[in-house]
Length: 447
Image 1 (cartoon, rainbow, N blue to C red):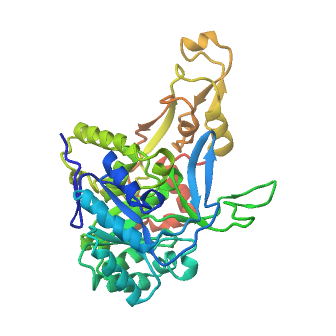
Image 2: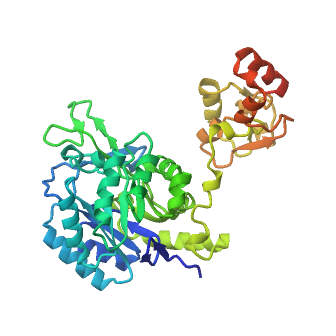
Image 3: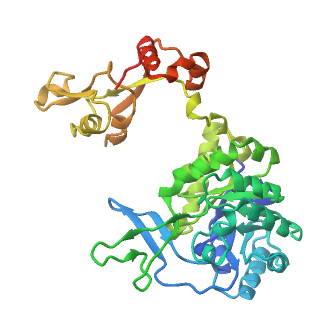
């Protein structure tokens, strides 16, 4: 059996699967139910300044029959009295002493306000705090949330205020609505944060009704920007996570990361952890499918770890970070070409269309005999001209049949050299005529 338990900045959890601060963590009832079903921890829905929520709060991106590929919300922090939240936090921690209970907090940018609420919540026995510096709507208009997280100096200042009175770990939740997320992450470190979490939701407008001209979601005929989450944001979240995980200055601090943004399956969770997350937080998937999804997450990650020979989560956390590189360091000599398995091909010709209209025109349609299967069909078949294939991989991405098109590495005899190395050795390639000369010498296909 593998060990899924984690130690996150001193916060113990039976597994890395936490609920993110959101509607699924709005009450003690919900969090206790989630713990019963297997969740290792939960970040309580943000408490703090008084708010009034609106209707309708959600807009979704649906695609070809799949619901909630992306979710936009204009919901604010908890609108329940803070006394009720504090009472339920205390009760939840009493009933589930081995699960991680984190309190998410956001108040106005005043030292007294932050320190007062931290002291209040601390008495409930929660395991840690998460400072919400990421909310992109409603609260930011009041000078909180992402308005705080977008300014590294503010991030550092407020974190420092909290650390002066906090007796338990403090996590700083970062906003993705910045040019470079590394700077606020470093600011959190400078403010003495125990850990960071990311990403919060992305600023977005979900859509416009082309019949009524109303913005989605529609609040009494009006709409505006909200926070975007769900499976569609996962690639952005992985990028921002890797940017922090690979930053040497941040790494020197040695503080853990809690990752979130589009996590729906155990595979998603593993990808976040391979890029440096110690814990993973889930929201939209639970809003869609319910708390029960954690059962598959636990089973799937356990089986994967056994297959890979990992005994504990720390064995693979950050394992893919050394593979993060810059474009200038990629191997110019690496070459792959597309090869089509015509026994699997259904002759939809999407590969031909994509290559001809959107890529490099290296797939032809031919009626020649390709296999025993083609003897019974007079329709043309897609065939790759490998000499002209640049290995872009678009054809295999549009192909609807699994493993029908494979990208195969070939040896062209080209020098294995990166752009940075090439420029260092041959600075003249920065001139177009010299670049063309080098391409011919290196036998690089030009399109």
